[in-house]
Image (cartoon, rainbow, N blue to C red; front, side):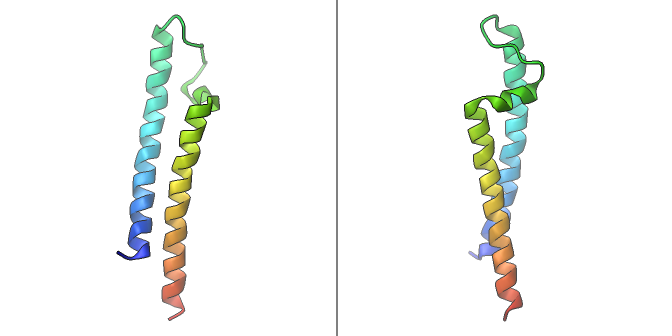
Length: 81
């Protein structure tokens, strides 16, 4: 499989995972509204300050950057031929 193909797959899967994480933040926020023990946040994006959520977003962005890097490397290699 070519590097550019793997790069495109990584970018698409990374973006899908990022979208799922954003929906997950909304889910966590609404679950926190119904739970009396959960910390109160004003918006769903405030959960990005929590360590597990921040780590998940950083890893997802790393997958996307890795995919873009593979695509760029393959395009440069093709243009040098």
